[in-house]
Each structure stands twice: as C-alpha cells, then as structure tokens.
Amino acid sequence: MGEPNRYLLNELASRININDILQVGIMDDPNPATYFSRIDDISEGKLVIAWPTNRGIRMLLHMDQILDFYFVRDGTPYTFSGLVDETKSDGMAQITVILSSAVSQVQRRQNFRIKCLIPVEIVGSMREDPRSEETTILNFKTVSNDLSASGISIRFAKRIPEGTVLNIKLGLPDNKPAIAIPGSVMYSEYHSENQILYRTGIHFLAIGERERARIVRYVYRTQLQGLHP
Image 1: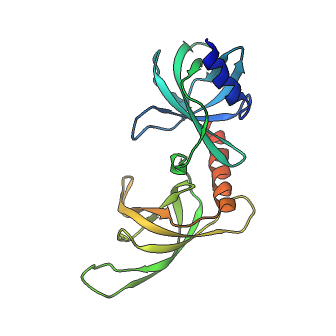
Image 2: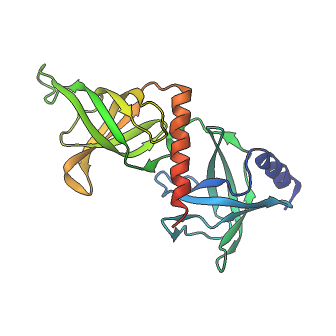
Image 3: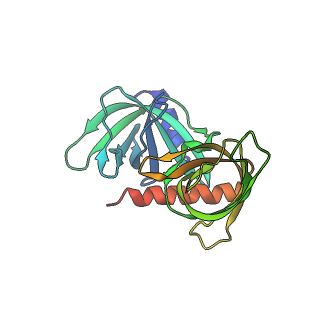
C-alpha cells in the first residue's frame, strides 16, 4: 500500500484503537442495512477489520467494493470510506481495507440509528381533522421503536399528523434524569409487524450537546452488545 494510504491510516490511528467498533455501509446506498465490525489491526500500512455482520449474518462483499465506515470518539461521530482489498472468509473472517478518504466528523448524526425499546413520554396536541379547529390532547407513555441522536420513532394507537409538535421525554438506561426534547412528527404509518399500532417518526427540534452525547453513547453501547451472540 502506498504512502497516501499510510498517511490516511496514521490519521485514522490517531482517532481509533484496536477493538473499537465500526458501523459499515455500502457507499451511495440510500437505504443500507446496518452492519457492525471492529478494528483487528491498524499497522504496517494496513487496516484489518472483522467481517461486518448483522445479527450473525455476514455482509455480502466483493473485491474493490467501496464501503462507508462510521465510529464514535468521545461522543462525536466520524466517518471515512475505504476499498475492499483482501478478504478472508475462513476461521476468523476478516477484510483488509485501503482507505479512500480522510477521517471527517459526521454532521448528519441521524446515520447512527438502532432498534431499541426504551420508555418514552409524549405530551402535546394534534388536529385529527385538518379541516377542523378541534384539537386532541396527547399525554401518553409508550416505548421507542428506534432511536438516533436526531430523532426517534414510537408506536401509538392513533395516527399523528405530520408537522405536529410534541414534547418528548426519553428514559435512557444510564441512571441519569430523563432527556426532555421538543420534536416534530415526520411521518405516521402502520407498523409493518402490527396493523393496530402506528409507527410515528419524530425529528428532534432542539437538543443540547450533552444530551446528544448521551444518546450517541447509548446507541454505540447497544451496537457493541449486538456484535456478541
């Protein structure tokens, strides 16, 4: 591997360590499945990682494929891209990567999303009929369907119209007070696994960096647990 790759690897090595977790996706895929890996080696001009998996299923890879990688350091998400240079599918399955970009800080943190069930409290009001001025008060408890640092989806018995502003309280299992965040409904549709409940996606309108870091840390701890059967 040439000097440019060594330079990029040295930059990566300054931000990440052996056994750190990576989130892996296919470059330019608008709806990639989420696969996870870990750093096995980052020396002698090589980046070697465990073969990315999702619930025990290996990611389909081929030589010269370009992948996107994400990781978190001190609560801040980073990304870089790389090309699959070598694969080893027997024994300890690994891939060797040639870096094709420098490490950069992720601005759109919604890339980091996990399936999870955490307690959520919702307070607000909505207009069930857009032609009427009548509003329905919302004050209920539920659980999340998935979570990222930019939003959450929940399950609820009624459809909540897009644009409805809600006050949300998240009970993360980190022995700290619930996080209070205002949010706006982005969509509300039947949950694919339950035709009674609606799956409602909510985008956070304002969130402090400390609260965002708590969510990011929880997301990556949950991802780490998913790597182990």
